[in-house]
Length: 361
Image 1 (tube, rainbow, N blue to C red):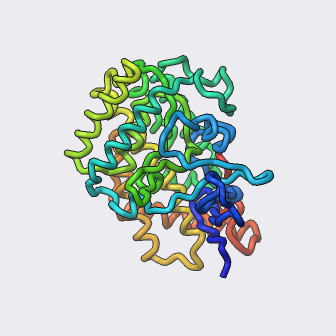
Image 2 (cartoon, rainbow, N blue to C red):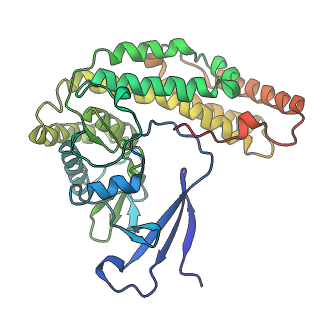
Image 3 (tube, helix red, strand yellow):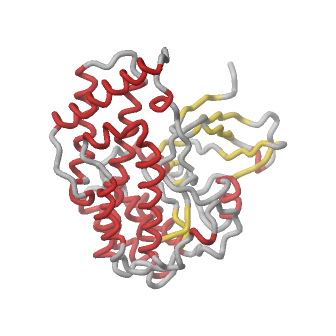
């Protein structure tokens, strides 16, 4: 029986887990994992750091709950945390014990200590493309621009019929920009930017470990909280308590980090809802291309899922609330258009614009 476990397939990577043969030192006990990026993926989020491994190395000793890194030859390995994800223990929408939310708040406090000039890790964005320190409006504008150019416009050749059928066009970004322009300035810090239940692992001693730092960036600390709340789906009363704890934690480290949160948190959450529309539309449509046949039942299921996402974002995008039937019809028209395109191009399988996994880096 092989000692190697895997591949464990995630959205962005395949992971292999194994013990180190003959490992007896402190740095070699337990199991370790290595990851390989899946080829040609869709990336819906802006990247900041050139290497997750380099970032984690720079965070050693500054952030608790990051799995240890070692190198074996030319291969970088990360300690595999034996445990379960927070999502496996507490499903989306359910309350999380305070012992874990306390650790999450502590993580936010540690992140708030790490400013843009205090971390030695190569970044991919040029200095000219970075917002002014503390310019929360400029920070969000760059995220909106990425969504508009690299998610919406970049995918227009394959999804224009669907976007228009759902009432999505370039005008949809205007309400987001209007909200972004009103954000209060806050001192920038390191953001994980993807703190959800599957990226938080609970070990046997109920310690919380934070994984998958690929989307980390420097920016508005309130954006990290908004992303976390959007992804976690806390019950309302627990969400309120966590916001209060977050304000206390970041203010005690960097005063001004929670300035204007009452007005700005809804604006940032509105962006997250709008961002999800474009990503979920593309992902849902592409999921249909992976089916051998697409019948009315599959279109209805996909339409129901998208209708919920669209309905949650009608106000931030300035669009009409769709019905499940209208969304299903739009998917059906897109599917018919796609099939005609495949036939006309003479390809035997999925057309290149619908099947390829574009890397939006």
